[in-house]
Length: 396
Image (cartoon, rainbow, N blue to C red; front, side):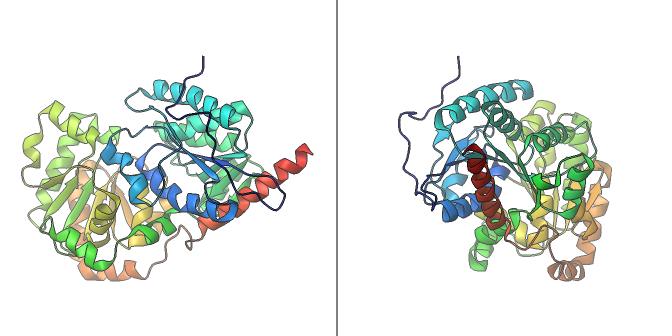
């Protein structure tokens, strides 16, 4: 039997009718903090084109910690999701399996004209599988990313979702080339840019609010390091985790280091008994969007394994040390915003960025983001209308 969600399935909100006389509804599936941030401007663009409440947002609950995602809906000016699922705290296979069934139930009940998924999470894969099973057109935002690292679960997810999508919205020409190389038809691919550009521009607080956020932690602009670490490759091995924390602690000799601690990392530190390595660092839990962007916008250097931050720094014009085996955002490296390092290279790479100081920040300040001009959401909304219209015509 299909799993039920928490919403009342009997209630369906009215949607503005288009010129064709037919009302449209677009299901937008998100369940993690990065997805919510990147889909927020697209939700606004879709509702600007199709009418207020023309989107039906489904929160999969993959990030079930309120601090990680729950608070973001309101902070980003979005109404609460119409559907809420409980995909958090499960194994990868358990999460994908549960969400595929639950999302299939939602889509079969609500009959949307199209489904939008973003990125490469378990929620993204489950949304794509559910849309395909129910027969609803699928739009993949941020298509074509490839790390060439099959050890990454996200790489598996991206490849499968792109093959299923009716419309692959690629952020860069390199992403388009990846899709073409994998045999995806040209008519299913669109170069749109990345919604993160307008997302950051729309969400970044004004400078006085940013400076006030820094002051709460005793920080001043351009004179501290911001760090986030959460990927299993860095948290599941105790030696690697200790090496990262020791490197961050070593940087305190130069500038303060603030670590926004992901719940997974917090638990891993407790599990291996490494809490003492945090003693020299400024440690916080997950931060709200405005505070985190304020800190990122003024950091002398950022140390992270976040894929999203590799894009965000190109808008914020800040240098990033990526602590990973591989990255799917090579454009950030080629543009000079990021460097890919092993854990034992963190301190040297961050110290080099600190020594470059104002010269490095000055160069980045005039370097364009490789992820577009801030119009991705409008482009994707327009392409969604074309896809829906074509689908309706084929059924006549």
